[in-house]
Image 1 (cartoon, one colour):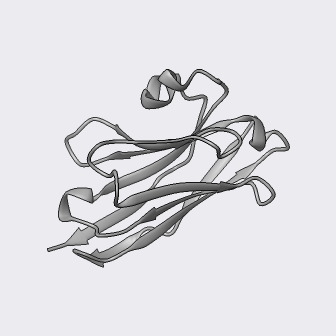
Image 2 (image 1 turned 60 degrees about the horizontal axis):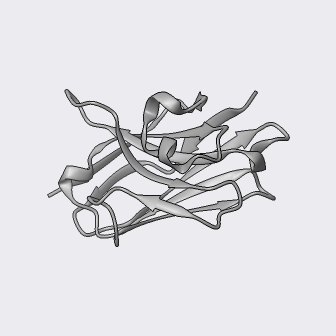
Image 3 (image 1 turned 90 degrees about the vertical axis):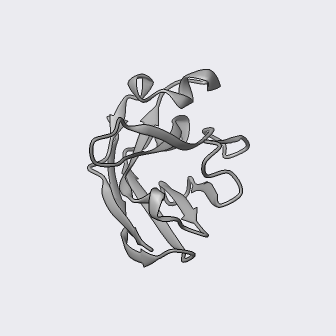
Length: 126
Protein backbone atom coordinates (compact mmCIF):
# COMPACT_ATOMS: atom_id res chain seq x y z
CA UNK A 1 0.00 0.00 0.00
CA UNK A 2 1.31 3.44 -0.95
CA UNK A 3 -0.21 6.76 0.04
CA UNK A 4 0.71 9.84 -1.97
CA UNK A 5 0.42 13.50 -1.01
CA UNK A 6 1.19 16.26 -3.50
CA UNK A 7 2.25 19.79 -2.62
CA UNK A 8 3.75 22.86 -4.25
CA UNK A 9 0.94 23.98 -6.51
CA UNK A 10 -0.19 27.56 -6.74
CA UNK A 11 -0.68 30.61 -8.93
CA UNK A 12 2.18 31.76 -11.14
CA UNK A 13 2.58 34.11 -14.08
CA UNK A 14 3.38 32.81 -17.52
CA UNK A 15 7.11 32.19 -17.84
CA UNK A 16 7.46 31.42 -14.17
CA UNK A 17 8.40 28.22 -12.35
CA UNK A 18 6.97 25.88 -9.75
CA UNK A 19 8.24 22.69 -8.17
CA UNK A 20 5.71 20.06 -7.22
CA UNK A 21 6.51 17.43 -4.61
CA UNK A 22 4.85 14.12 -3.97
CA UNK A 23 5.56 12.47 -0.64
CA UNK A 24 4.92 8.75 -0.40
CA UNK A 25 4.31 6.59 2.61
CA UNK A 26 5.25 2.95 2.70
CA UNK A 27 8.50 1.06 2.78
CA UNK A 28 8.31 -0.03 -0.86
CA UNK A 29 8.36 3.39 -2.53
CA UNK A 30 11.64 2.64 -4.28
CA UNK A 31 10.12 -0.36 -6.05
CA UNK A 32 7.51 1.75 -7.86
CA UNK A 33 7.85 3.80 -10.98
CA UNK A 34 6.21 7.18 -10.51
CA UNK A 35 4.26 9.42 -12.82
CA UNK A 36 2.74 12.87 -12.96
CA UNK A 37 -0.55 13.48 -14.72
CA UNK A 38 -2.72 16.56 -15.05
CA UNK A 39 -6.35 17.29 -15.67
CA UNK A 40 -7.78 20.60 -16.83
CA UNK A 41 -11.49 21.42 -16.49
CA UNK A 42 -13.53 19.59 -19.08
CA UNK A 43 -10.58 17.55 -20.29
CA UNK A 44 -9.33 14.05 -19.74
CA UNK A 45 -6.45 13.30 -17.43
CA UNK A 46 -3.24 13.38 -19.44
CA UNK A 47 0.26 12.07 -18.97
CA UNK A 48 2.95 14.61 -18.08
CA UNK A 49 6.06 12.71 -16.98
CA UNK A 50 7.24 9.46 -15.45
CA UNK A 51 10.39 8.12 -13.83
CA UNK A 52 11.60 4.58 -13.30
CA UNK A 53 12.05 3.09 -9.84
CA UNK A 54 15.78 3.86 -9.85
CA UNK A 55 15.46 7.29 -11.41
CA UNK A 56 17.61 6.14 -14.29
CA UNK A 57 14.94 6.56 -16.95
CA UNK A 58 12.55 9.44 -17.46
CA UNK A 59 9.69 10.00 -19.88
CA UNK A 60 7.87 13.18 -20.89
CA UNK A 61 4.87 14.30 -22.85
CA UNK A 62 5.87 16.29 -25.94
CA UNK A 63 4.01 19.32 -24.57
CA UNK A 64 6.33 19.61 -21.55
CA UNK A 65 9.60 18.24 -22.92
CA UNK A 66 12.43 20.70 -22.32
CA UNK A 67 10.41 22.66 -19.74
CA UNK A 68 9.58 20.11 -17.04
CA UNK A 69 11.92 17.78 -15.16
CA UNK A 70 10.89 14.79 -13.09
CA UNK A 71 13.18 13.45 -10.39
CA UNK A 72 13.00 11.33 -7.27
CA UNK A 73 14.76 10.87 -3.97
CA UNK A 74 14.17 7.35 -2.74
CA UNK A 75 15.78 8.11 0.61
CA UNK A 76 13.08 10.74 1.18
CA UNK A 77 10.26 8.79 -0.47
CA UNK A 78 9.58 11.80 -2.66
CA UNK A 79 9.16 12.50 -6.35
CA UNK A 80 9.42 15.99 -7.81
CA UNK A 81 8.24 17.82 -10.88
CA UNK A 82 10.20 20.97 -11.67
CA UNK A 83 8.15 23.11 -14.04
CA UNK A 84 9.82 25.99 -15.86
CA UNK A 85 8.64 28.38 -18.58
CA UNK A 86 5.07 27.77 -17.55
CA UNK A 87 2.27 28.55 -19.97
CA UNK A 88 -1.43 29.24 -19.37
CA UNK A 89 -2.20 25.90 -21.02
CA UNK A 90 -0.31 24.17 -18.19
CA UNK A 91 -3.14 25.16 -15.85
CA UNK A 92 -4.62 21.99 -14.35
CA UNK A 93 -4.82 19.83 -11.28
CA UNK A 94 -1.61 17.82 -11.12
CA UNK A 95 -1.61 14.30 -9.73
CA UNK A 96 1.22 12.00 -8.85
CA UNK A 97 0.77 8.26 -9.16
CA UNK A 98 2.65 5.05 -8.47
CA UNK A 99 2.85 2.04 -10.75
CA UNK A 100 4.14 -1.42 -9.84
CA UNK A 101 5.57 -2.32 -13.23
CA UNK A 102 8.88 -2.37 -15.06
CA UNK A 103 7.13 -2.17 -18.43
CA UNK A 104 7.71 1.42 -19.48
CA UNK A 105 4.97 1.41 -22.13
CA UNK A 106 2.48 1.34 -19.25
CA UNK A 107 3.84 4.55 -17.76
CA UNK A 108 1.97 6.75 -20.24
CA UNK A 109 -1.48 5.41 -19.34
CA UNK A 110 -3.36 6.53 -16.24
CA UNK A 111 -5.38 3.32 -16.07
CA UNK A 112 -2.21 1.30 -15.43
CA UNK A 113 -1.29 3.11 -12.21
CA UNK A 114 -1.96 1.54 -8.84
CA UNK A 115 -2.04 4.49 -6.46
CA UNK A 116 -2.94 8.18 -6.79
CA UNK A 117 -2.57 11.33 -4.78
CA UNK A 118 -5.35 13.84 -4.23
CA UNK A 119 -3.93 16.41 -6.64
CA UNK A 120 -2.61 19.95 -6.39
CA UNK A 121 -3.86 22.92 -8.40
CA UNK A 122 -1.49 24.77 -10.73
CA UNK A 123 -2.77 27.99 -12.27
CA UNK A 124 -0.72 29.94 -14.80
CA UNK A 125 -1.91 33.46 -15.57
CA UNK A 126 -1.20 35.18 -18.86
